[in-house]
Image (cartoon, rainbow, N blue to C red; front, top):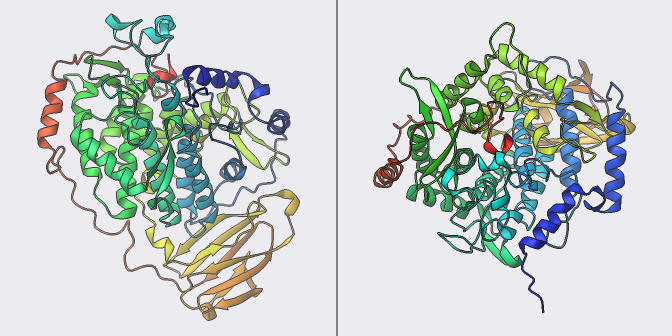
Amino acid sequence: MASQHPTRRNFIRSAGLVGTAGLLGTQQDLTAAAAMGQAAASARPTTPLPEPAASSFPLLNQRTLGWLRFLWEKAVTIDDWTSNGVPHPWWDRYTAPVVLSYGRFDLSFSAYGVLMMADQTPAWREVYTRITDEFAKRYPTYWGAIDWLTQIGDDPKRTRYPQAVMATLPPDLRGNYNRYGWTANGTEPWGLQKDPIGADGYLFFRGWFHLLLATYKYVSGDDKWAKPFPVVGYGDDVFEWDHHRLATRLDEQYRARPEGPHCENTKIWFYCNMAAALGMYLYDKVYGKDTHRSAENFLAYARRNYVGVSSDGKLEWVTQYFDPRVNWKLNGPPASGMATAFLLAPQNREFATFMYEAAVNAAGLRAPAANVRANAGLLLMARELGDTTVADRLKAAADRESDPRFFGKNNEMFGWWTTAPTEGYPRGQASATLMVSEIGRPGDWLRALQASHMDKFTAPTVSGVDFPSMGCYQAWNDPASGTLNVGTYAAAADRRGVNTTFNVTNLPDANAVRITADGQPFTRFDITSGTSIRINTTIETRQFRIVTGYRGADGRADERERPQQRPAGAAAGLGLAEREADVRAEAISRQPRNLLSAKGVGCACCSA
């Protein structure tokens, strides 16, 4: 009987399907893709989704509502991520081939916006819980880890890499060295490792997964992923993990290697390590743990070894990857570090700001006559840090160059189609990244990663909303006035005016509730228990002000005194490992190899 294990040949054959529209999925999927693409190409300039009026409290804008609807469709539409199936074509398996061309990055990047949307409407969580859970289900599958499960041994194409790729490899090893992105499972120093989470390398799988699971916990409050779940490995072997064991695995790796675990064998990426460290950071916030202590030593190591600073204090280069086995680093200009800085910012704003300022100054983006081109990494950082002048210029460039459109049967969905070849849908990774710049206010990414709304699980909560027929653009408890502010809208235009209901739970006293709708007294609600009511309404744009009497928890997470920040490198028990890592790095040249384009968004894969 022939081996059932995946092979490079099978992988390359399946990867070839990416470029062949007729083989990307079922005929039904392809027909839908074509129809959606045609609809987007001829999209009307208007959408039935509302643009909510300005409010004292957070809300979701029109583009965000359209993006939420598209994420919902992607999440709840059943597809097959096993070795016997193929994911739906709208999952981005096309961006940056060999490096990011895997559906798990669409899952991971899309979760950034879900986290931020959930923080805008903390009193309405059910839709974000469902979406994030569906993302998490797809992640530990064959297609989630397909590169680790199929890129076995050395890359057979490494003698024939294009010059742009060769330029990013150690000069004396070109032609005999695997390109960035090739995971090389089975090579030294570890050999074949079947478990994608238990492996020594492959950090960019478990690191982003850790962040996704921490996002689910913060959005939902549920411990589902803290319980054992299956992870598909090499040859379809199945391994059992849970979120806490995954966290422990990362903690152990960072304690042993402050220079960072390997992403693909044998490269340590600054960017991927920032994703893993951010997952540890959020995990600690939602579970009350302290695993990020080990990652703090990585941050200290990175500041000494993965950025180059001139004698006058200016950032000159940022390391993309470091291969400790051959003692070589690929360095790029400051602009190549923006995706890294975005993940770093919630953990160390000062370090991230230093990287951002260098990139902005190098690009001349503050000059009055600057020729500003779209750059997602810089846009996210400019907006997050409140650099309005630069953010506005980059936002205008993104709108000019990245093709933002409403689409769908009634233009009820939104995405960024970009200049990349389209599959009939907005390009997933680019859309997910750019949407972070559309959601909420400047600084909301940093605030979301502080898990500031952990009290939402005991506060008055909206549930039972018939999404995607109706949605909530606002759901915010104001303890100062003891009110819950809820804004509803028709998420599906053909359902407008239909009767519907939704619930409000966790009320201090349901009998004391008073409601206005659009400023007028509203009495069409039923008391269903001493702490809950059911509101009877119609699907339309409507603003409810529900007097609940809720005055807040005893102490909000963002109001509690935060622990004093430890000095860099002060985590207990890590000093020896850190010193050993510094010794290993001593011989590495600190001179930059500016082999990457200054236009690169964030990593070598985007510019080579």
